[in-house]
Length: 619
Image (cartoon, rainbow, N blue to C red; front, side, top):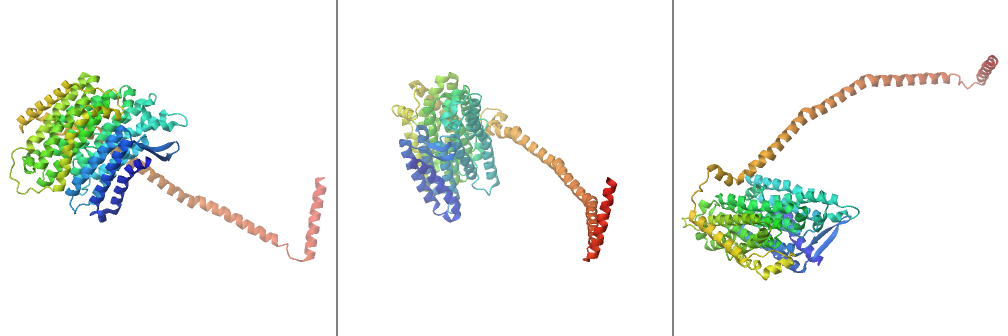
């Protein structure tokens, strides 16, 4: 059983590293290799989801490396590998032979492998390993076209923002280790054991996990990095920002639900942060004129529902939302990428009639957008109601906030559909979308329809049993009807409103279009003070430390010269004098040594005479 789990994580990691090492020589074979590996990983993930294997290997004394697959991680492993396979199918048809395909597919496999490690990790150290590799490969993928300074700058912004939040995991690991006692203190680093820590360590662990999860999932106040990440290729956005990186934080919160509940405050903070993100980033999505920016803001908003579910204890609804969102959002990003390649733009006014020019892509896009809008009978409509039932049980105000976010989901989804289905304009320079890039979209569109089934009994009850989430609240019929009615009302209103400007103050509209000014706030509150501190430290280094070091060196040189001039001469003179005296004594000592016996006899007589005189005088 452990071999199955090791193969699941090692196969994409090993193949990804191999493609990166071989480089451009493997460009031709890279798509085929990547697809074969992704398909194999999907088969292994499905098998692991049924068998629930676990694996361990020596790592540190008392702390082995542990991986495990349970209900939640099994569902997510299948979702990750399935979306990876579909995205790579699209990429194989979309990426031309002139691209560095071995590097691209290698990074995609390496990213998917690190995500699988994150999902199956049973301890914080293993989670951190997967988390770190996932962050590093996401930076490389967002900046894949590294010759463009704007893209590399966007990758840096995304990486540094998430890395700042990732420090929370180190805080959590340190607090968890400190909370343990005795020879088995490493056991406190188990994800299942975090909730058993005592105060104040429990609050530190909770705070660290919450900050890291909110940062990785682009929740408030970290949401702006996802806007920058849209500079990457569309397949990267489809993989990273639908089913993997941005949902990793939501997955972590769903995984550590007992920790949030035990802290006494973590669940409320998480639930209301998710609700606020769903509302505010929904408004941001409505204000966007760029399709990928609209989809990015909607990702933040939709993941806000998963975070809300984690805080409300609605594990089943949050998981269903995660899986359904993965299918819908990856389809939307891939369709946006196809239109960008064919039409050379992703601005909504320039995409008028795009769905009419490419009917299959337009139809698939419509299915995903209607699902995102929460319209029945599509998957996100039902999944959202399952998690909102948990919010209603916790607080009617939280439920109302969730409904407001759902209402906004329908508005920005209908807005995107209004532009792409308007009467077509002449496009003589439009490129053909490869057939190989269309079929993955069709598969995802079918998934958007089929994934509505798990939201209803008896499949929903089976999902709850798999997730070990007993006692989950079930939505009543009126809840399904209410959310569907609100979604229909919002979508109809947005369609009727069309492209007319919103009746809001220019400053308000620009604030939402600029992602609430979060990036500027981060620069003012964090980046600018850090840079000022760095410049002050550099000036202190140049003006104080450097001068002190140079002054010390100069004083040392002067002391060495004085020592050479004064002390060295005195020492040399003393040594020379001692040597001269010794030589003189030697010469005096050699004079009596003549080798003649009568001289030795005279010397002896003289010595004895002196000795006798001394003895007489002493007495």
